[in-house]
Length: 67
View 1 (cartoon, rainbow, N blue to C red):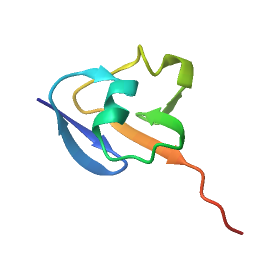
View 2: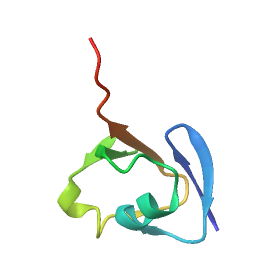
View 3: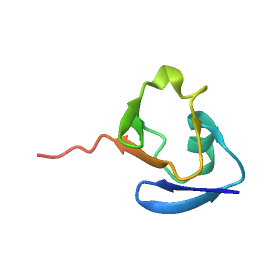
View 4: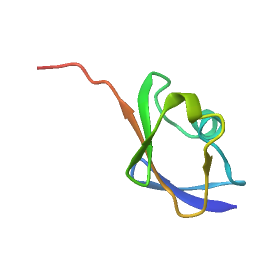
């Protein structure tokens, strides 16, 4: 098990995994716009290869309408 933070919530996952795998496992909106790891935006094209690791801080950003 590794411990990461997803959108401010400490989360344990079975192992280091790609961002794509992580998004399937954790409770995040499916219409996310961007993923940030440790305050660095990871391009969507890299989500399948970028691996999250112990202690990473993951932020999944979504679009919210309003005015």
